[in-house]
Image (tube, rainbow, N blue to C red):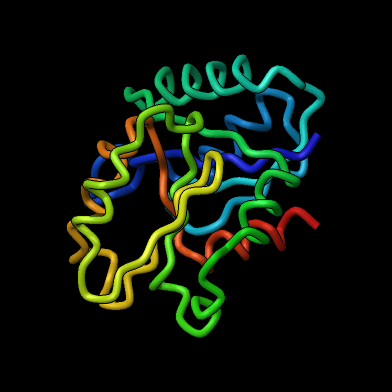
Amino acid sequence: MTYIALIRGINVTGNNMLPMKSLTALLEKMGCTGVRTYLQSGNAVFQTAVSDRARLCQTLTAAIEKAHGFAPRVMLLTTPELRRAATANPFPQAAENHKVLHLFFLDAKPAKADLAAITGLAANGEQFGLHGRVFYLYTPNGFGVSKLAARAERLLGVAATARNWRTVTSLLEMTK
């Protein structure tokens, strides 16, 4: 089985440092093969015989905590899940500028997302879409200045990790 690991909150402003060589070594020690990482922000593609995703997440989190002293949130996607998320992109204009679209991968489908508050925060041409366990946020004036981006996870009511469009398409390409 091929998994895409999205590890949240590592290597950001000098906090929770996890070198990609160390991540690769941890995954290989867990029996994963074909490990490839993308950027320094906690993205990896690998194969494993383990089919219990929850157990694999727990094992990887525990290995990172033991080796580096912190326990990041790990989300694992399958290739079909990542492909569906990319195919469902409601903002094809993002192909021209990958920085304007972020996909928030959610731990679960939101049961009580506050869509009214999300709509109220959308400003300066921002648009969003929610499809299952993926929240798409189009921010033509920048993700870093978006109030909606900063509050999306809380308003969705589930844990999430976001990746820009280039990262999503690059990870998908790495699964081939």
